[in-house]
Length: 340
Image (cartoon, rainbow, N blue to C red):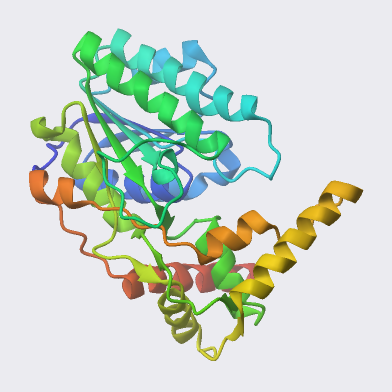
């Protein structure tokens, strides 16, 4: 594994999020000076605990600010994105944040002589299908989010070709770790309060990745010349079944693993009914036919390319990664209780 040298300045966008926080912590401990770009300083105070971190509040539409913060930086990690948006969010919001914002950042990086640019993308650029998908698979986004990230990938890679910027794209599946606010966090909450149920037989497979494994991959590609202009899927060592994920969480929480199971055909019918109610009344119900389909589907991606070409090996297991999430959540719950 290529090692990043010390005494370098790095910009991390989206630094207060799940990936950004873990990456900033690792960079700080490695000896980097980190420019941490966040939207709200009030949500990012924890980053100052790591040392060697400057908090910069701002957005990717502030071109003058971007030119200022990348000046003197050798490396940019771009993790900021519009991700967990409510259903029905206009496509323009994803385009503004994920495409235009990336364009502004790439232009600032090129203008100010940044050497390496690592872009965190998503497997949502691929179509929904049961087959294992790799970097040679067709890209066919099925959501505005996926479409915006694919467009942003193009900007990053094009800049690499035209300017010599060493650009690398990491396509990630569901990421789990402390400060995650997405699907895994919701799943943990549902199992904790006893509202979780298995859809179908629970044996459908999902690719995921622990945030620590994401950071390992990001550190690896930054200085690795073989990664120039490349796209890599990055996943844990194997996919997990819906049941295995849920049972692991239940064990860590000390909850029962005897989940209520709903037959798939019932769920499909309920989802279709909910869609009809929505169409007739305008009332959006939490269950939809699309959600049922996603819960029951296989979503499997191969990270054989980065393992083969760069020697990447995920070191954090599902249990270890989830235990870190739950431990951190419990610490935060205790702090909240003490401050009341």
